[in-house]
Length: 118
Length: 119
Figure (tube, each protein chain N blue to C red):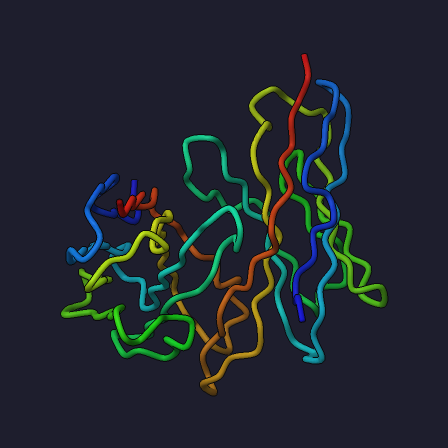
């Protein structure tokens, strides 16, 4: 049963610490999204990769956040230094981008990483 | 400006009854896709149903159907014969125009509607 895997599931850290969240997309998918979910803002896009290349990271605070895909099986989201306002659930999602095929482009989500910054 | 609007923060429905969750969207692109996702209390996001802007018929998936009214820019989700397990947050999302030619663009989500099914 293919699924998106995220680690850690829960992370509690202190302000100023570095946080790295990892995501293993579904094998064969060529797009990876990072979303942040908070009660106030809902689901916000942070970064979007296609074939490992970043296409859109306009939603990500550049001074402290960075997103990479070192290879096709791993996407990382790093926060350094972390702040209390970064507390949220971070979702990774992957999909198969097949332009011109009429595919739905459905995104498959991981279970999320709940981050609490004290 | 909000691109996806879900005006119902919370809804109650009696078990076995049907319920409609509202969603309106805003886009000037002729080609777009509309999605509904379910998020139970466990937190995962579960894909429910998809409607393409050029699809002639309303999408259906089991007990889920999408009431697509293109002129009104609405894409309401209808759940028939509600079950206790349907209690969850429901998110409407739109795939916007891609920034890169040939790709499919990002999913933009509404704020969600919390559905509670009463026994």
